[in-house]
Length: 159
Image (cartoon, rainbow, N blue to C red; front, top):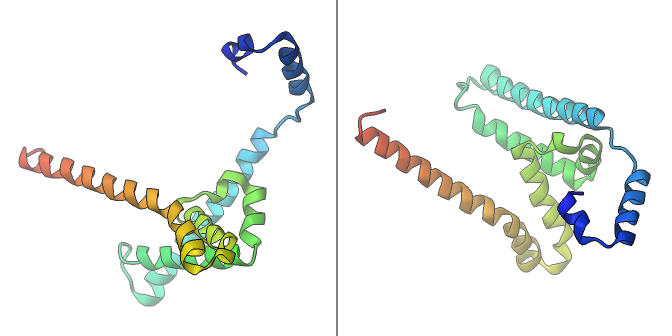
């Protein structure tokens, strides 16, 4: 707790904060980072393996194999989330499962499963897009800004 916050607390509250800090279990930061690194690396290696599969057996180029690879990773995540397996992996691995594609797919499916009793339109659809809406808006806005910068740089002859 910062010193500014401590100054606003009464002496009894400060004493309780110090007591609570001594009782709080220490987090195994190195172990948590190792788990996150390993699981994130395994997910990434799985994605690379799927991409190599598309390149070797379906004769995709490295650029065109990306889209079906992402689709397969999303489907795997959806299935694992639906069966409740992904949550156990995420609880053990922590931030290692927050790789953008799989983490976003897990978030969307979890929202759909949680709110399915409210109906398909207002429950499933509405709550899924509460999460997806900001991602889509900021993604489109970022693409717009980047494209403007590229156009300006090209007209100036920098690119």
